[in-house]
Length: 160
Image (tube, helix red, strand yellow):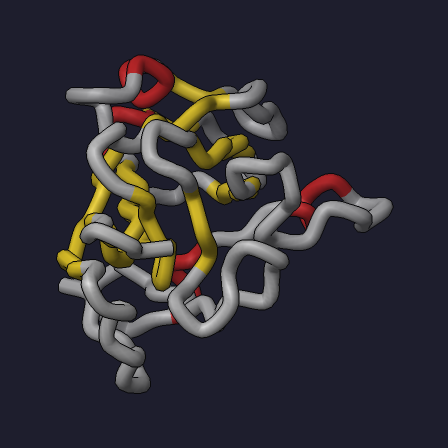
């Protein structure tokens, strides 16, 4: 379960925030139904969001041995992307936490459309993930999952 390290401001009136976790695994993301060979990476895998409200990403958790590279809805890399060594462009969030492999990476905004509420994604948008096997053995992706933690902001009469 995701719990922010710091208190976030309430939604501006008349908006309403609702906690939300998008989970992606072999049930709803076809890329997680196979294996990833040693040293290989996937192509662009969209993580589609619901169309009912904007989403603000506040944390990421990941299960499994695969490394990930995440991009926001505008194609900006959330993890590093300019390293000469390919493995340096991916992260293994499980290394950041002691929660049985579900590492959390708190986000504090910073994008033009993010800020204090988290990393903005419009209703119906999608984040993009690339998976990388930085090990010497094949990885069974059916044992992997990625969760995006944050809030949905439902608009009121004049919500922005």
